[in-house]
Length: 199
Image (cartoon, rainbow, N blue to C red; front, side, top):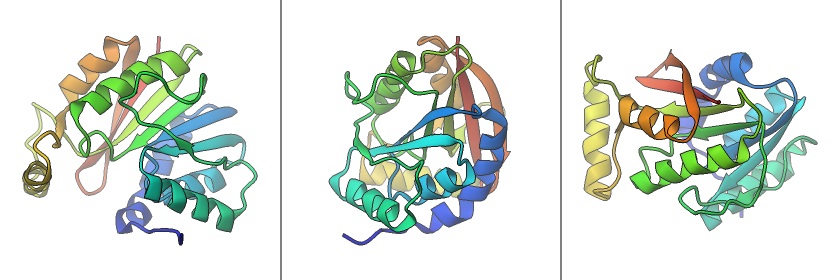
């Protein structure tokens, strides 16, 4: 299979990387949950050569695309993708030094977010290890952009269990799993990064 592309990946990868430089550890393994096409994995593995980058996805076509991007890039720190469904009780690895999840929380049932927090609690063993989320979210104190409202309606029309999540709900789920809120970063196109850290 040829490597797939997502236009948003080229637009958001550098703004995301600018946040990652401040929050990722200097060494160790970064688990990317829901890697999608695999473009982010290649970009970040190249940007952070001292880190091992572990892509993953639950979708067979996505896994094939990630492998195609990996084969083309030939980066020594980019690992073979893992089949990983965030909602599952058991994950196919036991330890990571950081977890990154881009654009999954709103394009999945809430059970996937619950599973992401449960999995992060299990595999992030080092105090301070980060869980980093990127995407559009609702915030009670900030009006939701019209483009995000339209996107939310579009998602719900496709699958009622999808949709933009409220930051407060995500924080509550994370903190119930021993992941303390660290920071929120505003990024372009009405997206944000949320960083939680292992207690």
